[in-house]
Length: 254
Ligand code: SAH
Image 1 (cartoon, rainbow, N blue to C red):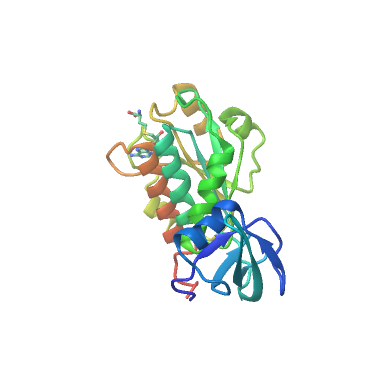
Image 2 (image 1 turned 90 degrees about the vertical axis):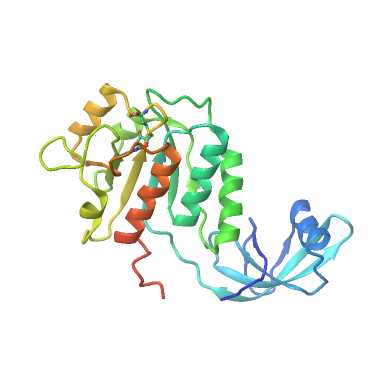
């Protein structure tokens, strides 16, 4: 693997000989902070064209470019899991976004629930966090960040081929109708398939939401242990469990 080389996420297409202009921030980071010399090697990716070895060329004080030399990794897709989360306080939402990229998710969908208390979610900021996290964790894809939308609307248009696992804080683990499954038991042995994980806000889900979710055939309630987790802990734990049992942590990446 490329070890210590700096990875940069860019918008432009990547290909042999392609010269990619660097943003002011990227040029400042490479030449001002990291003190890279002309011709130094970096890795570029854009979420579409794989990862490329490139050589940098500074230009002036705040600019520069990088020229693609060869492809180091082919494009790969993330595991087909979406994270649906109710935005919480800013720093905690940033945490959810960052960790979801590191743990692996194909889409991040902020949902407005009855008890969602965050004003709004800055999509551009969330996308910047996605890029930073992808640069750092060696991901090749950039999960798409959706606009904040009402949970009810999302459920109404849901594609039933995608199973929706719902982190339901209100029930204990157990058997029988209306009881949540424990994720380890639930996910173990499950064949890979499109999935989505739903985590609620600090206030949890309302009785009306709970009733609706329980009645939907494509929804499976899941209990994440005996304690009440903060929303960001629940998101992280839920994705971890799914990745370990159904996703790309099962060892076949090696
Ligand atoms: N205020 C609520 C807790 C909300 S925790 C209460 O006191 O009941 C925020 C979200 O994290 C929940 O909506 C749920 O999706 C998830 N969560 C937290 N702990 C959980 C658990 N033990 N099992 C399943 N989901 C949990």
